Each structure stands twice: as structure tokens, then as C-alpha cells.
Image (cartoon, rainbow, N blue to C red; front, side, top):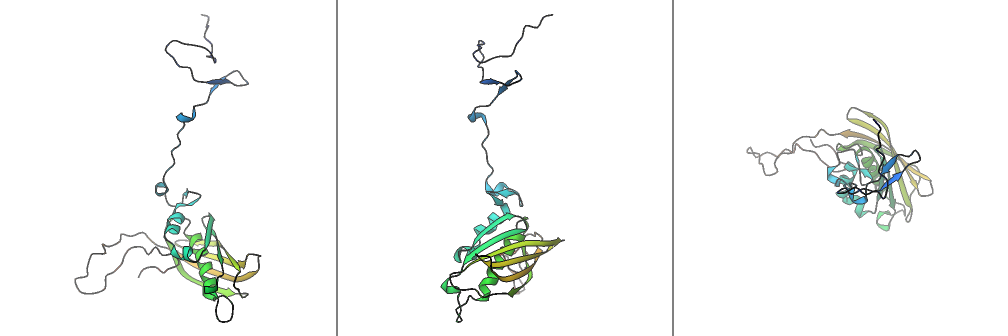
Length: 218
């Protein structure tokens, strides 16, 4: 039996049927491109992204951490997290950071390195805090310098990690080397703050301390 059917082409009219716009490919096969209003443009809100997934250009865990980090805001620290396990923090040296010798307090240099360390190790999702850290000061820092701290993961084993942070001036001059040891906390229920110890003792906190650079709750 002869088959007289053929592909619908632009301009063909079929009673009761609306023909969408087709294009003919090089091989003679019609292709269909959905109108813009038929294409889904849904984007999940930030809080719908699971921990560790990129959300708004950075890991979701980092976005949550950044929103509550007052130190970063107050000191004008700019942080970028190109990938879990890596982070770059930048900070201008202001008058409030300079000591009586006209150089920056070492504590501020340590703080910047610790910020980079914290964001690097929290990029994977679970809450991770510092188990320990040390720093070697290589060169003095002065008013007006812009410091750059670059954190990189060296090892992760179990719930522990080792991170190195290089702190330099904007021109690349090394000023300090920092090594941090991280520990990822187990997520546990937080006791109702209203609960009271009937024995009169201190209230025990069994939840997660979410402050960056802090120490695990005892």
C-alpha cells in the first residue's frame, strides 16, 4: 500500500490543529524549538541546595556561613571560594590594625589566614572548626597594605584535615605562612535552651558550635 504521508511543513494548515514553528534541518528532518514561555525557568532557592552543592556561585554551606560572619563584614574582608578545600581572603590594613611599632598586629594577620582556612574547610558542607593552628611571620605588614591569604587543602582523613595558608601583600611578597588543622563535627540534636538542670549545675550544650574558627563544644 502506498504511503502518501509527508512531514508537516511551515504554512500547512490542518483543521483544529495549531502547528508549532518548525525548522528543516540539513537532513530534511523537521526540528521543533519550544517557545520561551514553554521552557522551565525554575531555579531552586538558596536553602534548597544540599550541603556541598554550588548555590549562587559558591558552595551552599559557604553561603550560609558568610551570611552570619560579622568579622568578615566589620573588617572589610573579601572572601572567595573557588572550590571546596580552597579559599582566598583579602583585607586592607587600616589604622585600627597598626601597633605602637607602626606595623600591623600579628593577630590580624593570623585572623585573615584563619578566615581563609575556615572557608576552605567548610566548603564541603558539614560544620568544620579549627582543632589547632600555627603561624610563621616572615615580613612586617604596614598601614595601607592589602593582604591576600590563599588557603589550600593538603590532606583530609576521617573527620580531620590539614590546610596551608599563604599570606602575602597584593604584590606577591610573602608575609606569613599558616598551617591549620580542622575537625568536622558530628551533627547532633541541640537541647532546648529553655531546659534547666534541676540539680543546679551548668546547662550542657550538646549541639553544634557554628562559629568559624572556634573550638568544638565540650
